[in-house]
Length: 253
DNA sequence: AACCGAGTCAACCGCGGGTCC
DNA sequence: GGGACCCGCGGTTGACTCGGT
Image (cartoon, rainbow, N blue to C red; front, side, top):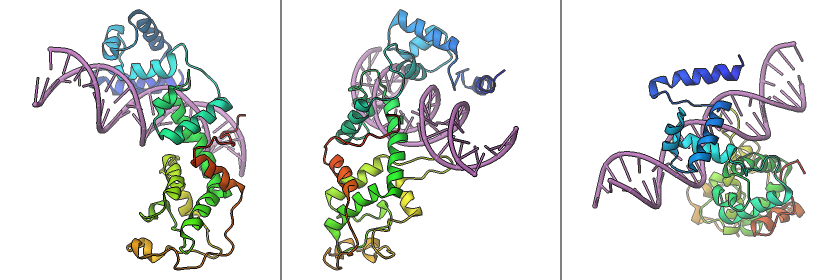
């Protein structure tokens, strides 16, 4: 008996006191039952469908299994370059409206798109955080708007009066908060581990970020001389402004 | 070969909105 | 009007895989 099968059985018995509802991975028998039942009765009324099919699953679970896996027109395999760009474009417009984005990608599910963004794009961003692309984008925005003020160490420390442009960059990052094994970390945390290093010398969070945001003027301090922009920041900025990204995420193209 | 960490993705959970009685 | 139920969405979890050491 496979480990998966053992775990599946354990999952079943664990739920026996809860109305014998099964949880965990679907078996071939369950899939067959569900497909047959949907073919007979059509989609919808999932709770009723689950009961009539004799499936020990919730209607929710059946719906999810059908929509994300069993539905005949579901595409399998890697996202094409066009699809990746479309996802990025639509996400820039609508944010985390995965189902809405999925409507524009025939055969792709919201779950798949969500997973794509939470893995491929996050990975890219995390890499960017360390490789300097995103850091450069934030740096250039910050430099243009608050050249006199050292940047905060984390996005959480952003003062409420930062410009919309910089907020755009940070919200872009925030939308893709990273979860990684064990505890949860984020792109923010990546900076916490390795602070922005935006200024030529070590930067400490300015006092004004702690309590008196409005007392700060962007003209208080001179701009650090070594700040510079490169084309990487322009790429992200162009994405933030709504232009199509020229840099496909993921590594399967 | 064994271990570990990161990436992937199927599945679950909580919540809000819609509908029906 | 309001309670019960259902559905769909977005966020989160956890099992599995794979590459590196």
